[in-house]
Length: 619
Image 1 (cartoon, rainbow, N blue to C red):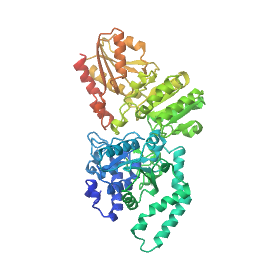
Image 2 (cartoon, rainbow, N blue to C red):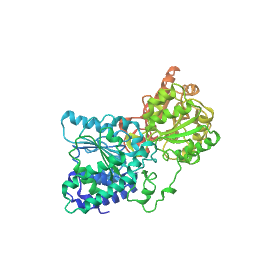
Image 3 (tube, helix red, strand yellow):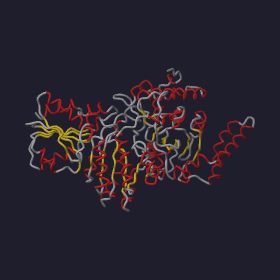
Image 4 (cartoon, one colour):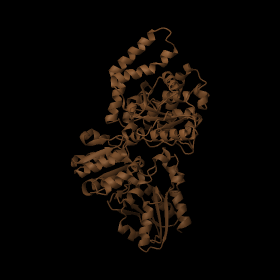
């Protein structure tokens, strides 16, 4: 496709060379480019389509990297990457050795900080702004925050610590849509700011009045912001942000790039922290994404003219979990479902539709979700908290103090467990087996849908206290689907006479271990293969069984230190076992954005490298 204006931009300095009248055309080119590019590579689409004009206006006025743009989560950074010299690399987005889908300082000096989890941008920007003050450096720190971030407590901790930083700017990208529809009092408050008819009538009257005066001149145009502030104070009396020390500006049309550029230019000489409220439409310019922004939040490759998001494939562990939870929710009216802005991502839309009074989306507030569940459990309910593994990390303290200490009856459903494609090091589910085992929470790791259904029924109807089920992103594979669901803590999947080596794993890594066992068998090397269903606590019978083998390989999509394989090795040593033990696990320093097969190859967890490791270390 032709993008003559975008092709001229290799750094933010080039953007400043364009005429003001060319900026809307540039935004159109960027929108068309992103739609075509992301449809081929996959990535975050709707959030980026909604932030184009905002990002263009910021780079038009600011001086990156002297001015630090800090994105909250980073889903909306694609235009930023285009304007900072990475257009030619977009065909490699989220692919091995390509550019990341998130800001990353290792990739560009224009990326101020890595951004994979929400609620962090304000605290980071405050730190950067304060550092500039201490070092007497020029420039501003700009936090770009979505409205969904205001459902997380860390934002409010930051708001309480803005001090008098006149080099701090907070931009609220208010699209009324985080990954799941925003909930709670803050969303209602922002909606009131955005939609109050009295405000917009007054704003329109003032603008009409000014437009009617000939030769209005620059002084009166610059005074418009002060007039708008007076109007807002008359209507709202104040805003929460002004009470906390900000100069509040807005609401502003987030898709008028000319107005945004003019506004940011006028606010360059700030005397206090600025809070700019920008209203945008998620998925702007692509009608399917505007109608269904949640479905187009993160996409695989698709055909822009032929994709019906309402009929897209839904088979996955997440879907199987959500549908099974509905069946169990029918059997036990105490079952409640909780998630943190991930209703669709975790498959809980089914439970929401069937039992809305027992469904709770707490927003981007993972810590609250865990303690909230503990409160429900303390009063006899059966809460199920469904979170991605990477986001469960944020509730670690709450797991220890609010769930585990009193043995509250809370089930943690851990989605995206293990290696995750595309999103890189920020979204990998490689820590939960380690930290759950360290605090003593029983954990199951099903390898297929049948085992997932068994684990859910077992944990909700027959088990009590803290417990967790972890399962991977995507659908079950054909090889793992064939495995029987015995309900045992572990199973021997392949047994060969006179086998001297045991291969052991759990979850989706079981497939690679099985394939390794079969490859070795073809070469005349007999090994037995074991799969764990309950990964913690480790069954005594498993230790006794494995202690009969002279050599053991344990492979897992988890960090080595504190992982299940390390625990098993200790148990074997305590059992006086003296054999050879090889623990294959994830090395966090090697994590990047790639497909799961590519990540397994990098981590030496694919079948071929497991075979090589056995030959080199256990034969």
